Image 1 (spheres, one colour):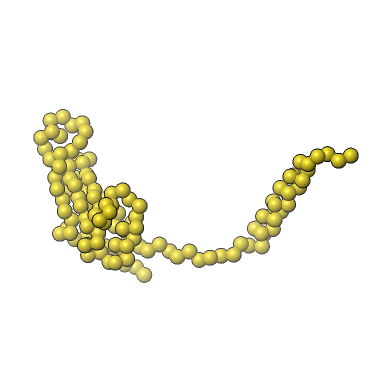
Image 2: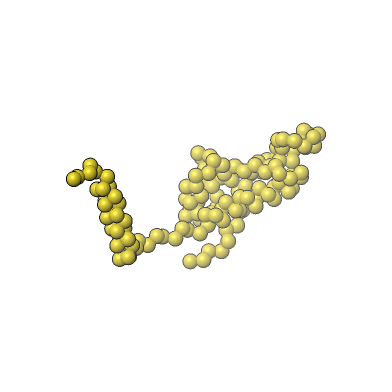
Length: 135
């Protein structure tokens, strides 16, 4: 079942500008160019199965309340950081958009069973020869 690409509603995203960390001289100290993006997963308009898979991710950026927090500070301008944060949010949502394929159980082949048993008998013989030497 193919699903159209999931688009994130910009009204559901909370963005706040903060000062970037690290080197950068005076520009870093006086300009709030970094962006904090907060996306409340349970309150979003995403389909229920996508929300469930998103909340099940073992990601440190998702809080206990189910809010995905992204910090973008790679670029010099706030607009580019905002676009970067949106792109990263879209990538996270796209990573869980398609459900994982169910695994079908299979039986081992006759040849693989024979190879396993042959390996076991070889190992058994090696161990049996380790005993005390009989005259």
